[in-house]
Length: 158
Length: 195
Image 1 (spheres, each protein chain N blue to C red):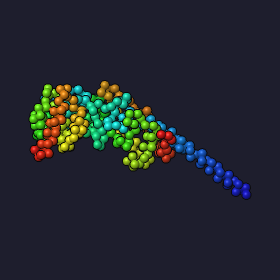
Image 2 (tube, chains in turn blue, purple):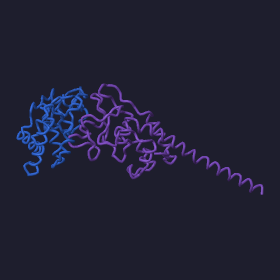
Image 3 (tube, helix red, strand yellow):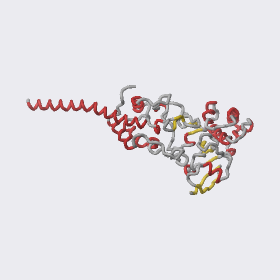
Image 4 (tube, each protein chain N blue to C red):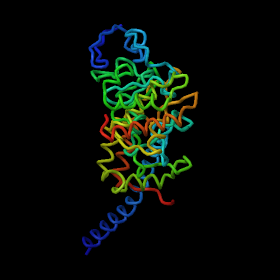
């Protein structure tokens, strides 16, 4: 066990865990932030996506000891960001969610895409979101929501 | 006159020795290159020198899971960057390899064809020694790259797979790889003939 100082959604948090523990388990079990989901556990589905140092990161496979001092943003904190807010609003407007299990990861990846590519093409969306699986098949609505959020952002609404 | 004859004979011997040594040096260089090539085409190296839009994984060199794509700089795309999983070091508890600046080699440094078959020894050699395609590295530069580049050295410290077993290593040790590269460079980086 070891003590780690983390910055999660702008707040300093301290955890005492085994250094090999994946970030996902620290978030869910130690910090009780259950918005980030466990899907596959091998970085193949994207349900566990958070931002680490601004990079969309699969929290299920990154040990806590590998994080250093990079700030962590989770679905619980994404609405504090203008792009994150726009994406969440678009998700509601487009009624994207069906069962919802994968959607926090979908939103985190979509925000990462829109932060670097304000006018994403279909190919940009397919490639950036290609690692986020949705068993309900909400992909058409996800695509529409990303385009809607992009339009809102480019209009100056975010 | 005997002195002149002796001098001419000595010159002839030196020229003959030089003529004999030149092709031998090249042949030795090519032999050293073949050792280098055996490492470059091992999965730990060639999996990230693809000719396609994606990296490969495993000793069977299958397409990388999770629909990972190359991206404009060989580092993936915004929602799916290499760095979103691959950290600065191996994560043995989860089986994810890591190293500094994890990325795909650029397409001009591909060592495979678009059907994922390794290029020939001659083709890889030509690519590696083409300074318009190798970041303008000369022979000593290539040697230094093989000696020091973190992602090159990672091949000999590839960590554990998700099942907890060790990833296989290239066919030579890093020391043997460097020694072979040095012999090849000192021979003038000769390439095999052929396609």
